[in-house]
Length: 362
Image (cartoon, rainbow, N blue to C red; front, side, top):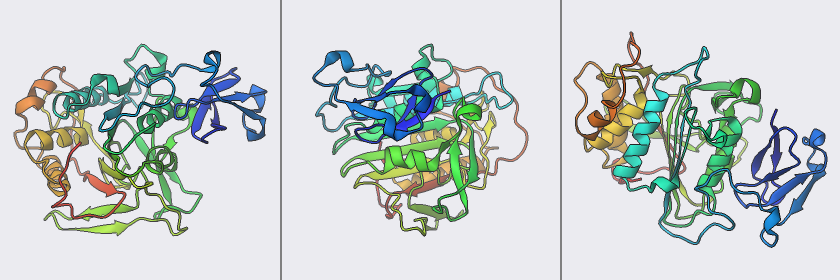
C-alpha cells in the first residue's frame, strides 16, 4: 500500500511505493529519504537530499514529458493532463471515459495547438504503469502540470470518471461535504479530495498563468474548491455565489486565473451515455464542451456555459457536424441509455468577472 508524505523541500504531496525508502518530488525534483519505510507516517523520519549536484541521486520523472532538472525558462507554453478512468471489470465500469479523453486530446492538439509532447494522458489502456490513473499517479501528474509554470502559460486538466462526496471535517464547505474524484484504486487508496486538488494545482498558480479544468464526473460542481460559482438560470442570467470558506482560508490562486467547467452541481449526477452522440458512449459534459467549441459558441465563458447546457437539455435534437462527427465515428456503438439527462454544467472560478464579455480561450 502506498504511503502519503510531503516533500521535505517544497512540502508537495507524494506517494511512497511499498518497500521504497525514497521518493523524488515531481515539483522540485528533490529526493525525500525515509529512514524506515515502516515509519513513513512520521514526518520527523525524513531527510532531504539536494539532487542537482549529484547525478546518482536524481530519480527520473515517471513522465517522459517532464523536463529533467530545473523547469525550462519558457514562456507561453501549453500543457495538459488528461485523465480517463473506466474502472474496467468492476461494478463501477464506465463506457465513455476513454472516448472522452481521446476526443479531448484531439481537440487540444488540432484546435488549440497543444504539443502532443506536453500532454500527459492517464488511462487504463496505457502500458506504462506510471500512466495508469491511480491516485498517486494523478497527484504526480497534477504536480507536473503546474511545475515551473510562468506568465503566459496555459494549462488544462481534463477528468472523465466517477465523482463523489464525503463529509467535510475542516469546515471549508458551505454544504458540509467535500467533493471528490475517484481514481482506479479509490477503494484501497481513497478518493482525490477537492482540498488536495486545490492545494496542488490552484493555490500555487502564479500571476499570468491560466488553468482550465474540464471535469466530467458526478458531484463535480465545486471539485476544485474555487472561491466563486456562477449560478446561471435557463435564461442565461447569472449571479456569482461566494463559496469562500467561513474559516477565512483563501482557496484561490497566488495570482493566476483558474476556470473550471464541471458536469453538474454538487448534488447532481452526470450521465455516461450515447444519447448525445447517437453513435457511442461519451460523458454528456465532455461531449457538450467539445460541441460548443466546434459550433462556434466558444466566444465568451457565458456563451460556452449556455451552449453546453442547451446541448444537454436538447438531447432529442440532431447533433453532430464538423470535426466532432469525425472523432465520434472512430468508435464503436456504446450501451443504450434510457431516461432524461438532468445534469446542468457549472462554471467556477478563482475570481468574479463578466462572463459575457471575457473571451474564452485555452
